[in-house]
Length: 247
Image (cartoon, rainbow, N blue to C red; front, side, top):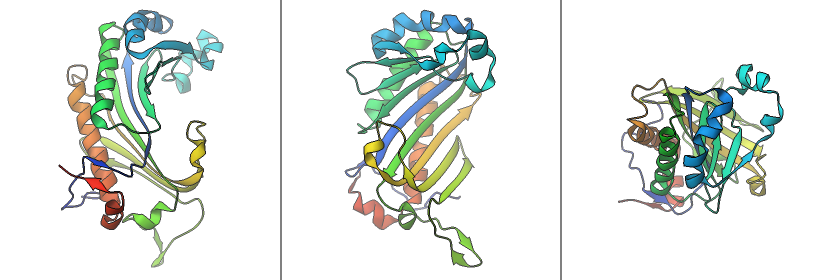
């Protein structure tokens, strides 16, 4: 199967961790009117996620926010606290992100599950329609030289500036895999990284059955799938250079 090494052994962590951003997003249907979701979820989520701040989208008339399909899943509020985790809430979406230094799957997944539980308990979620888990890995060099993926034309390896590769893999989850080089990090939180390459993997399921009850299991499958693709892409000698730690 493409992007899976037969002899692959997944490390529990690497000392030279390239992860610069991770986000879990759920999209949902709500029994509440769009403009009432925040008020209904506020008390539960504030205890978990901190102080909410309105986002610029709220300057738009509600008629536009609620009918424009391109804005359907945009967050309306950003919750911040002393915690390094950021929570974004909209009428049809909830996202929990961890920009910057990654603290490991255990801490992150527990935070995600706790905040999703808080929103579910507020009764604003009638049905989860999509669960996505996205990892962005940054490298300050041409990552195409360190992965077992080449793009060829007429028998010759293609190499140029601002190269990009993108595909969606279908497994237990779907995985949008994007590999790019010679890019500049536009997020101001990450801009200090400068130019380099990214491996960006968004693992997601749509219309998952019994998603509220099975959220933890679906999240775990997305994580294992994403991690398997990532380490299958890397050349074994490059993995060794990251100082992997195994069980």
